[in-house]
Structure formats: C-alpha cells, structure tokens
Image (tube, rainbow, N blue to C red; front, side):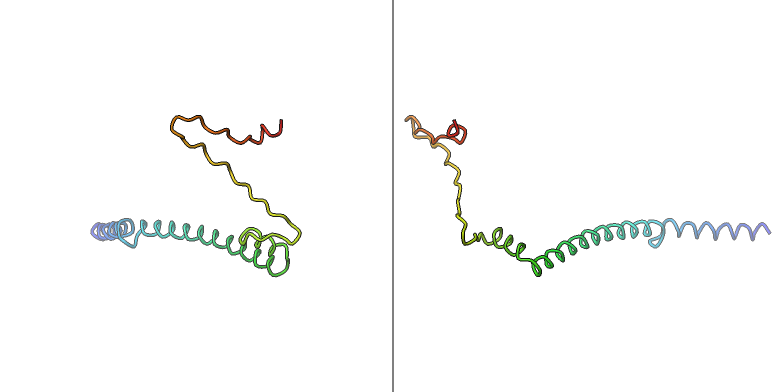
Length: 113
C-alpha cells in the first residue's frame, strides 16, 4: 500500500510540474488572458471610432450643415454673401546692424487706447 501511495504521489508531482512549468501551463494561460484583454480594449476603441464615423456619415447624408462645415474647414470655402479676412501676424524685428530698429506697428492693446 505504501508503494502505491508513493507512485500516486510521484504522478501527482509530475502533473503539478507540468501544470506550472510547461509551455502549456499556467504561465501560458495568464499570457493569453492578457492578450485577450488587450484585444478587447483595442476592439472597444475601434467600436467607438466606427460609431463616430457612422454618425458622421449619417450627418453628411441627411443634413447640409455637416457638408457646409466640411467645406469650410477642409476646403477653405466661404459663403456667397460672406467676406474673407486673413489675419497675418507681424514679422519679428530683424537686426539691422547697429541702426535703430524701425518703429513697430501698434499692437492691438495700443490701438484700443
């Protein structure tokens, strides 16, 4: 009976070793669980992106406001009765080699006073 118990204990030890340390064991299961979790997160991001794109497609198909907004932002178009103003920032002062710099144009704050 003791021999049988020792044999069973040995088989149990071998099975435990295989369970914990083999390539198909617990480590592989944990790695696969992590990979599944990462993929689920990516899928959730892509699902949200798809919903956003579907809503945008619906807006473009049904309403002219979305088309007008796209034309303004992407193509730079303006309406028929609108005036286009382009604001250009002033150029930085250049070093003139010892001469006094030219008077800078008044800033917005100075113009308001």
